[in-house]
Amino acid sequence: MIRLFIAEDQRMLLGALGSLLDLEADMKVIGQAMNGEEALRSILEQEPEVCLMDIEMPGMNGLEVAEELVRRSAPSKVIILTTFARPGYFERAVKIGVHGYLLKDGEIDELADAIRKVIAGKRVFSPELTFNVIREENPLSAKEQEILRLAALGKTTKEITSELYLSSGTVRNYISEIIHKLNAKNRTEAAGIAKQKGWI
Amino acid sequence: MIRLFIAEDQRMLLGALGSLLDLEADMKVIGQAMNGEEALRSILEQEPEVCLMDIEMPGMNGLEVAEELVRRSAPSKVIILTTFARPGYFERAVKIGVHGYLLKDGEIDELADAIRKVIAGKRVFSPELTFNVIREENPLSAKEQEILRLAALGKTTKEITSELYLSSGTVRNYISEIIHKLNAKNRTEAAGIAKQKGWI
DNA sequence: AAAATGAGGTGACAAATGTCATCTTCTTTG
DNA sequence: CAAAGAAGATGACATTTGTCACCTCATTTT
Image 1 (tube, helix red, strand yellow):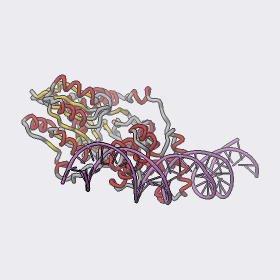
Image 2: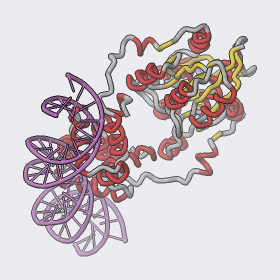
Image 3: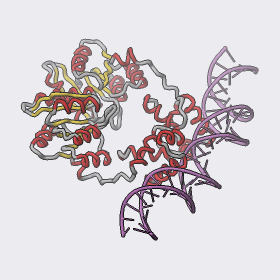
Image 4: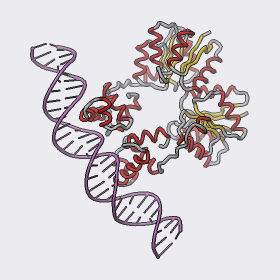
């Protein structure tokens, strides 16, 4: 019997996946969570064999949870299940070493198969990601990402300086460099591009 | 036997809901669609008793489909099923006369019940919408929304002027007013607030 | 030890943004 | 009809943003 955990913040999808997978003869859903923190806690405690993990959840996101699980050498294998085919997310997931990355735009039938494959030691990735998508490296450094994340929320240069303890000139230099790297014409457009690519 | 139709653009949720509802003894899913046009065509042809309808779909959206069904006096009853508790959507759905409006953040169990209630002639609405949620009117005029939508994409004042045939001063006045109305400190933050509230 | 690199900073400047008071035209409405 | 509103425009002004060249002070490399 494969013991499953599902972390997904949309209650209806969570419920639906849970019920359906529970119907599979060889699987049992032993836990569910609607946010990252709760997922992390429960997974560490219950040690399911496989976790289905959404990325965008309130609080801690799915990739952060996966990373933490690896860091603590939890025995559970993680399959990321998300709406987004963003290269940045995928790249990061692979780097973390997740066992699968599937899109919510796939058939549910493929899901049970994928879980069995992962249990058999294989890794499963949506073909959309491994083939079609041209791998675009995130060109932003960690600091640049942090600054752009704040700017994307509409924070002013001054607010960013006091949050990161940098001078205003430095923040402006960083933003100028970011705009240049992303080929944007101002911070707002840069934020849009980076979000869309999954870089922030 | 209740004959159901489901229109939902996220394949996995569509499949999951379909499978689950099909398991109900008194229901049968007779059709599915992943976009508005297809949904409209199939529903007119197959005349299901109840349609579950997502709002945000490629092409024609769910509210438009519902409106068209009413206009052509199709016998099928519509239950809107969406992620968004946006007052604007809800308002419009009620005006069209849909038989239900549920959020994807509700339990799946409630879904089958809701369908039976609708068949029994009742109307079902998420309590979040009718009670809890303080109806926040969109404070932005149509023009303001349009301008903010463009600004949110990172377009400069100059680009907005040439897209809307307004003088740059006027665009700046509009944005100033928008910022004031939304209690933001710049256009970027204003865009964030408006998006989050579903106002643009 | 000298050179290169990287994180952070300055100062100057031009351009874009936000704010306000005031003005012109239409369109509604009492 | 006169008054009151919209929608749009102007001009002036203070800030903010974006750009660029150049500086400082550690750490690494060589």
